[in-house]
Length: 168
Image 1 (cartoon, rainbow, N blue to C red):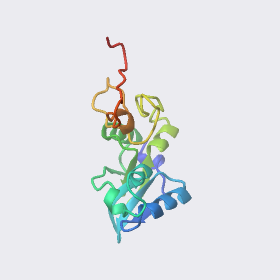
Image 2 (cartoon, rainbow, N blue to C red; image 1 turned 90 degrees about the vertical axis):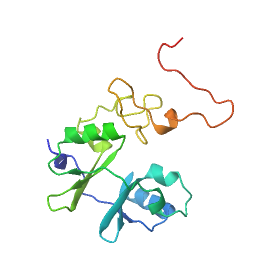
Image 3 (cartoon, rainbow, N blue to C red; image 1 turned 60 degrees about the vertical axis):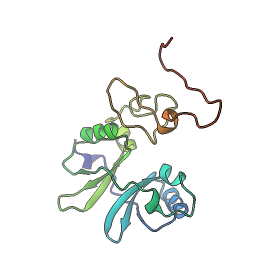
């Protein structure tokens, strides 16, 4: 099955100069988690709500967007898109048409809904908290996936680490 069968054609585009506060309001209104960032007619990056929450409200989206993003073309299969998302730790892929134009977007949610991702902790959800956002890239099929929050060391004094599994 091609990615075009599961993608959304509803493209939410934000200008790179918009504030993160205004961008978050727009994403809320559109009921989406990700958006394409544009400068004029050019796609210059992608951003998600998690990126917007990491900076102050008056920061421009261009500061927190991902400039190095992964995309797929219309000939990509849904299975390949799911594998790319797991490999790169991303939840959103712009889909590029034959003539180079944006034809849609595919999200982790689209792939779960259609059975190409299993919606299982450690596979496409954080193994610790179950979060579906800010997942670390999959480096090994035998190692469970964690979100950035669960994989970062504690930042406060007296923080602790938890060992998963049967350590001594």
